Image (cartoon, rainbow, N blue to C red; front, top):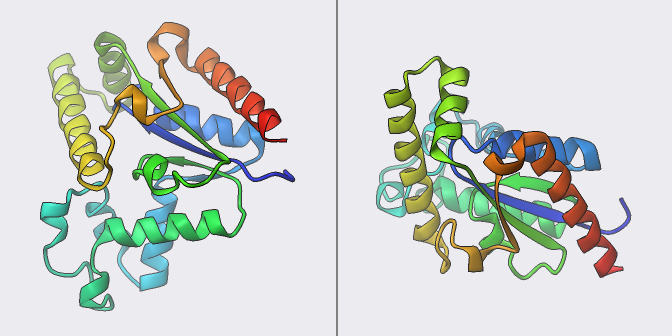
Length: 200
């Protein structure tokens, strides 16, 4: 791809946001970043991957705790800040990619090639998806959705001057329950292609 394009996707838990983001990256031939960022940091900083992932999407109040590992300097022990710097590094290199969460729509807001999307869903469909994926009961799925969305909202709002999931913080907000995963993906890909044409 000659022209850089960065797609930042926020999502509610159970909305299939990760799956949709991965499919967009595959279809458009773009790099994909989600947990891969944590793995990259763990490798670079010689951390245990499991330990590093425990600090993913953790709000500022908790991030001020002691370091993530013995090899990280005191001023560098906040996973969010390390992730943000890595995201900026990938963007500054000219790489085109799709990234899920991590306040990317705010961190990279100065990039004209940035497309920002928020994917939501209806509770019943989200519950059904989580139940099928993780063999949970309806109540367990509902509780998991509430927990993860609260974590994501708190994390995002700790670092961004826009609110998580609020329409004015994104180029496009879409309810994946209305069209389903496949057609939501198709619609977003068409929007991304139109944005790329507009940048030419």
